[in-house]
Image (cartoon, rainbow, N blue to C red; front, top):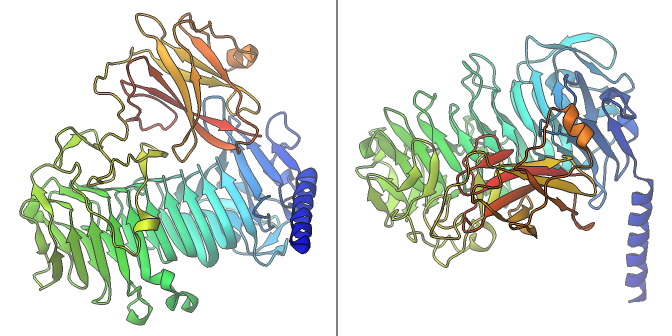
Length: 598
């Protein structure tokens, strides 16, 4: 007991010392460092934070992160958005590299993690990169390398290239206009990609570049928006060769395939049980007409060497899958007869009609339980005999979406998918039961648990707390100043009046948990802002109908993105149908993302 107590004291003292000596490097107009390259990247230590402030022109710089943090004191590279929520832009075109750095594969990305001669950390750990828009790593763009020479990016260059690293979190970033949006090599592990917008990547005429191309030992994708690739780029949207792949609560639209989950090139992965199980749940998968391959998901391998294939189970549950192809659509291609798919509680809908929707391409086995399927669906379009086990599903013409044309795939009252789901396979039920939902775009909320799970990515009632819903004033908006903020943020509600009274302001974390509730009511005071000059400089003028409250977050709350929601009295529905992800009013509530920086 004495030894254990002493150990705990040592850990506490170590954590205190780390926090005491952690350094914050602040980059941007009026900050200590003007350019990103002024930061001593080669000497970063546990607990250090690099703050890259938004400015009106992009940062044309590139660098490597090859130092380690700890679990309690990670190294954080954080963009500080503008007052209107715009992310700082890191532009690879004509970018400069800090000359003190020395690393290889510079042509492969703008921000590189791991793989450098100086600094020479063997395996960087505990790194967080968040709130950055990173773009333009592909031909014909060029840059200046760490020797001062001009080089061209390769076709497979990426916004972030993780060559080596463990416990890496990429959060609330945008990756666009690159060969690959994100690339992770097989020396990486424990990767989390969340709340990111990954779109507009690829290389013209090439099938080898994708929005996402990853091969890690343990990777989680959640709450991301994977948009279309660049025009003329035939790559896949999310291509992955990892062991322990989890794809949950994302919106993935278009690409040659939405998901291409194939074999690794790392022999270390082959024998691990994590390689044999892949989880895809709670996602919205959208296949547009004319979008390359008619298969939505590919699982198994593509190398041609079947000894490398996954030879396991794709657990596919509680997804909403929509195809607007005018011709055939195939749900999944399994690469060999050693691959299987356990498909439960999915909405699998196509606008062309059931005879154009097939479950399998040719090989493997799919087991179907409690899915919503279009009437007249077929086993396969291949003409071959395939193994489709039908354990009971619901068939119909329409699954009962709120608004298909507006891509509102939540369930409407009377949908046949309500309370029509089934339990998951016993071996995965505890760890992979869906308990969250994706909200457009790059937001989330908790999934209602009413005892009987619905079919699809949304639970009926998750966003509804009252039967009667009244519209909001068209001018109703939320703003927040300063944003990002440190100790307090003023939340302004505009449009108050004309019979409208805000009932309360609520604050949610990125996992959908409500962490604060600020009652307001009819006696709300006129808005007053300590940063009036800042608002005026940015063209923000107070409104006579604008009222405000102030939130002082608890010191125990971590830095990060939070969601403000305001609901009027009698209107308690909370959801979002906005594509911006920053400020929304959906007729019953308004939302605003804020960034807390401690």
